[in-house]
Amino acid sequence: MTASPVAPPHDPTAVGGRRIAAAVIDVGLGWVIWFVIFFALSKRAPGYLQLRDVCPTRSCMNVGHRYVTDGGRLVVWGAFWLYLFLTCVVQRGLTGRTLGTSILDITTVDADGQPLGVGMALVRSLAGAVDYLPCCFPVVGFVMVLIGSHRRVGDLAARSYVVRREDAGRPLAIAGAPPPAPPAPPPAPGPTPGPTPSPGPAFPGDAASVAPPATPPTVEASTPPNPTQPQWDPARNAYIQWDPVGRRWMQFDQATQTWQVMSS
Image (cartoon, rainbow, N blue to C red):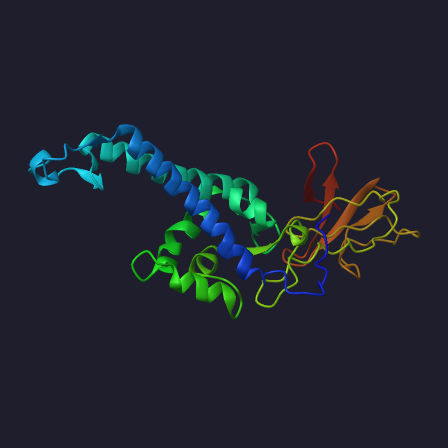
């Protein structure tokens, strides 16, 4: 059964400061990885040479007097983006948390308080590129998480919320969150099952049938019955019915399970 939302005494998304600190930790760790791999693969240019003398085609990447060529540059940036993908998409999508958010005790969830899944976490990260404007400085994202609904562009695109850990795991009772789906209504009470009476055979073109009357009517071949429904004729030991279209009596044959013209 889905847990009912409980209105918390606070706004669970009012964690802007924690979000900024967690982002600094996660992205900062990515840059630590970048620099470690760069310095592991880089070479130091001789002091008597300029970098343009070492890389005349400007295909190198350098930090100070240390540089890497095209292959090293690909490894450095590949490791950096792989780390961000595994952290911000896979780990966050499956668990709702990263190293930074775990330290700050917050988690990323949907309106039901559950992790987003890898697909929506990828949408959140791609749309979140807008949050890192202008020019890789996340001014847009920082401002949006500190005011209003505390949701940045990536959150709006993926319909996600960042909340305190204790507020996750249940539908969120916050302004702007879609209400949880109501539970299915209970089945309507029905009559107590009992034995079903055996109906008479259905007349051609008429799905209705009736049980034999308590008092069998006296049937005359020239007189139509009232009402025109299958009736039990004890004398013939069969059901009979008046056909208003052909203006004739019909008798049900049990052997062939068909209606036949009744002989007079």
